[in-house]
Length: 132
View 1 (tube, helix red, strand yellow):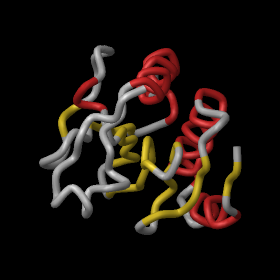
View 2: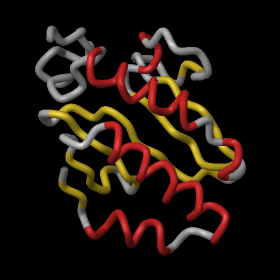
View 3: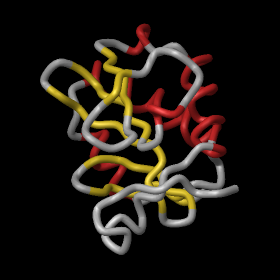
């Protein structure tokens, strides 16, 4: 597992309560996907498996959003569809709101269920399910 220093810089810029959520989520992600590479992508921490974005989080004015790029295909409930592809997310207002069991389940599913965002341009704007 690799993690860019820019991710720690992202956390340092957050308000203390938001940093607590981000630290908790980062720890969960790194525990659940130790083989993933984390970096700041489009100004937010995102973890990748083989170049494909899997999970990330971002601070919004309403709270911390945890997003799974293939989350609409997950069986574990609790995520809300986001955007026009297969992404789904959940919003946390404080660290006590984070259901670590659900996050662990989503992380497990994210390894097995992936839509190919890495090659979206080559696929003419379509995401295709990857085979594992």
